[in-house]
Amino acid sequence: MKVKTMLGAALAAALMANAAASYADDVINMRFANATNQAAKDAAVAMIDVVQKESGGTIQIKHFPDNMLGDDRVAIESTIMGDIDIVLAQPSTLTSFIPDVYLWDAPFLFATAEDAIRCFNSDIGKTINGKVESRNLHYFTMVGNGFRHYTNNKVAVKVPADVAGAKVRVQESEIQMAQWKAWGANPTPMAFAEVLPALQQGTIDAQENPLAIIDANKLYEVQHYISLTGHQYSPQILLMNKARWESLSDAQKKAMNDGVETFIKVQRERSIELDALSEKKFKDAGCEIITLTDAERQQWIDKAKEGGVYDLVKSMMDTPEYVDRVLNKDY
Image 1: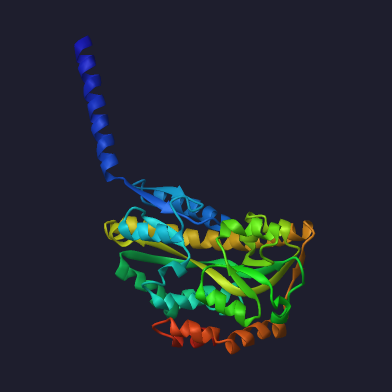
Image 2: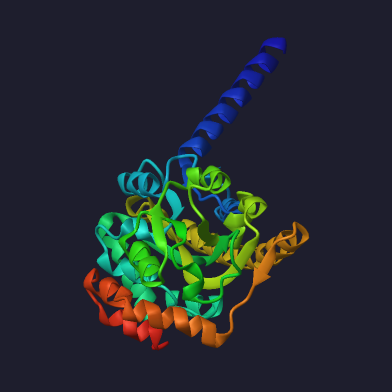
């Protein structure tokens, strides 16, 4: 009896081991390279939970926030190669093989976040962003990372004349350089990690970023005036390795799409919430928040047109007519 019991236990253990091995073989492990903003990180956690539940545990996603797997360009290249499965990044990193993506870098395309999201989900947005499919990338969605705003310590900026001669940090972008020159400033390309010390040391006078970035990186602690210029709307694009996507079953694809819908919802809700919290934090810290009238905002747009900024964007695109269509809300 003792021998039979031992054999029975051994057999049960073997069956359990085989079942676990079979389950492990069926599980797809993925890596998600995420950005630094809190709304995107919270949205990713919610998405991962939905995908894992809806897929019956057959998809397991490991989250790598804060650009842990490399900057946007590295992360997208790694997703194309299949080293990363899912990525959220700035679409500007795609311009080398999708020139129409330059559209999203143009200033004052949108008056509200709702306009931006409507455009991203329009035929124009889907056509441009869908071109990633030719590069072993599957397109899920594009979400907003907030409007970019101008901060400095010298003047409550409302119109382009207020930034005349100011040394403002910009990303290494031909379009950003052109727009700030058109507005009379002295644009200075600089790595983001250098911005805070450069502001502290007076190497630059100003910077521009979404409220969530100004908050998370404590830029408001060294900048008194925060002007809500909203001169650009910063999007982020959610992509997946196409080969990996196509390897999924229909049920797993549905689980992924359900997760993406959750990502979109949570990211939007948290963006609104965090922007409001950031503004309150800035005011509590003694900063001045400056809002623009429609007439003041129009001055920036007019100067950008006069300075040839929109013409520059068009010259870099395959489908330049998209610029005027978006400016005219024809989407």
